[in-house]
Amino acid sequence: MPALSFAPAVSLLAAFQRVSPVTPLRTFMRATEEHFNPSRLAPHTPQVRHAQDAVFAAGATGPHQLCHVLREPGRGRTPTIVLGGFVPESTEQVFLLRRFLLRSGDVYYINYPRNGFSLDLLCAQLDDLVEELTAKKQPPVLFSVSFGGGLVLEWLRRARLAGRNPALAGNVLVSPVACVADLIAPGAAKPATLLGRAVKPWLGTGEVREETVEKSRVIFTRMFEAGAQNKASLRLLMTRAELNRLYAGVMGAIRGINAAGACERVRSLAGMAAPTAYFQPGLLPLTAAPTLIMYAEREETVLDPGSPTRFALTSATQAYFPGAKVRTIANPFGSPVQHASLIFHVANFLPPLAAFYAARKPAKLKPKPKVRAAA
Image (cartoon, rainbow, N blue to C red; front, side, top):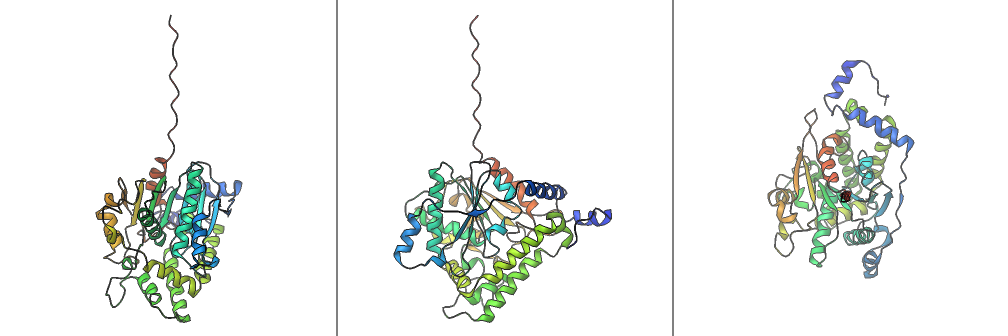
């Protein structure tokens, strides 16, 4: 892909109409910071392991189902835990938000294993990580996207059932998908959404055929490339090196997930409770932590019109998350914001995210007033 050219001016103007006018400056600043302060991403060795050890001891899971947790050190004391969707992995999901998140604290990326998945083990790993950070007096913000949002909702539901109240600094849900009915209407002969058509063949109990695996890969590739089709806009969002790295990461994940990994992820989704199913005083609210819920202006390629999660979180928001804010993210400059489009519409997501994280910063102590000596 050619590098960004500053001429002719007409081409630049056409590109600017599709993205925020400040985006090229953000891209330049991010690339400069990356050059002088490169990423220090590394595997995280958990200091607390008793929840995941208990799951292993039960004998229903194996090490191949353990999620990979990566840590990138930040500057503040409010860490963020990122849980992505089916694809891409969390490291690519917040590709253009990394530097923003690092200003508040360390970022922990939870990447799901490619050859297996266990909902019980994921919840246990989240238990341990939140406990570890809380012990350091650094309660985290949970930042979840699509399927990751469903995992967070299920984790919070299980905590409430167990009588626990995990310490969180905040909770961000981007286009959450928490049950199969969010993608496929119950009883529907044919899914109404593209993602629903990709997921449905995996819901049976028999062995998944290789052609089903390939068809799903094609659908996920098509969904990603649909967002990447505006080359002019992307050259303003990312450098050529960033584009190449992002594409390689996303395609690597799509091709690397095998039939067992995909099947266990989808069946975990099928085993999660829809939020409408636990609308009862004993289980709500899920958490009192400040919560930001964001939906895209165009969710119809992924979410079924009757999505119970969207219905619950938008019509009874305060019952699930007291004081939560729900935002519809739109792009006034051009291409509409699609489901969980944190990469291609990062500038549209940034304002509500910036306001949310600004409110999470510890208040500065005011200096004590000086006492004047009596005359």
